[in-house]
Image (cartoon, rainbow, N blue to C red; front, top):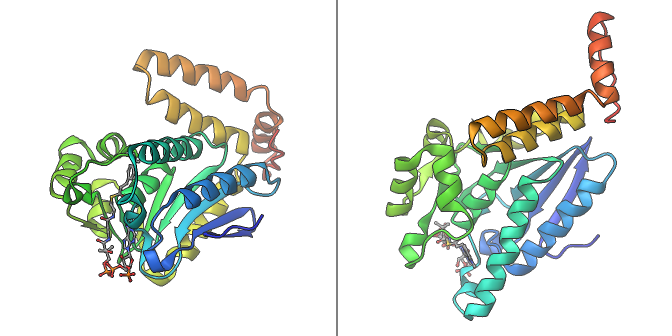
Length: 260
Ligand code: DAK
């Protein structure tokens, strides 16, 4: 598939999707959102892809938000359609059977921070900066920032970030739980690839069930969530990988996963 705003590369079971609009600091417009949705949908079907990494091109930005040049001209109907389209991309990422990692190589602002938060894991370069600067534009975060940010960093830290619109450094983001790891700029991609490969080497049905249990369970009350976990736990016992994993343990050998 040919994309105008993305570069897609597969490296040993890990698909790298690079948002490629460096002149606009990889800002998100409707075409890019459509392409991201198509690329993720097709990579999910790719037999050798187990993990998807999202990053930004150039050394300055992951994604500097929604494309303000375009957004400035939006009619309410266009704004609504952009909202629905992007909401559906973010749900696609959260519900994807594949683990999706954000490799935050620079600014992740507004919609860029929200895109990173929709991913399963966030790894950042040490010069990355993150924030929700919408307040400075007279708007509020509109792609889930008011909901995902407090769930990751806590209510008052999220409110402070959104009230002030100030950026936080990668180190601060690590301290408050907005990112999971920080690496030197030139080591971000190799560390991301290493973590992605570790995840890719695991039995993918169980990986997918963990993702579902966490994602859906977080929306339920605890009792229901624990029952839901029990159901998914039971489902593991329908897989060959469960039999293989337990046999391999007693045979003192490495398991050979079949993802079935
Ligand atoms: N959109 C379009 N172009 C952008 C951009 C953006 N978000 N961010 C930067 N650029 C462009 C700049 O205009 C500039 O273009 P030229 O002037 O060279 O043509 C080029 O990228 C380089 O930017 P700077 O010259 O500003 O670079 P600096 O290093 O000086 O500053 C910066 C980097 C990231 C601090 C600065 O560019 C900046 O503050 N950018 C804007 C950050 C921002 O406010 N992002 C938008 C947040 S609001 C929706 C829901 C949610 C949203 C949208 C819709 N619906 C429900 C429909 C999301 C909203 C947001 O994301």
